[in-house]
Image (cartoon, rainbow, N blue to C red; front, side, top):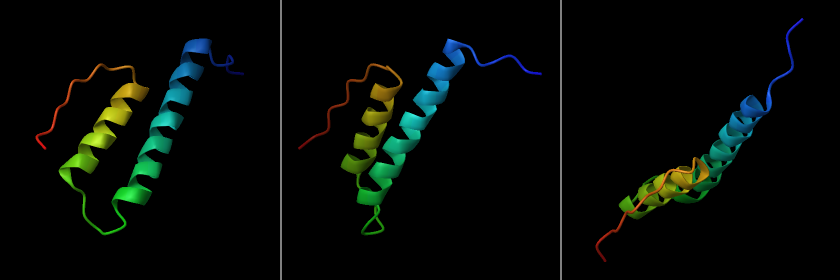
Length: 62
């Protein structure tokens, strides 16, 4: 019989679920027209980085 997952493993499990939710939500909106713009790609990268607690500093030209 296996040991139950530790708190750290559960934290990573929920982090993966959160990232999958972010990607699913993003793709349902961004891929409506079949194209991905730079702004949409950066939005995804920033949202995933935030979910993973990775600091980002991305600035796009206007």
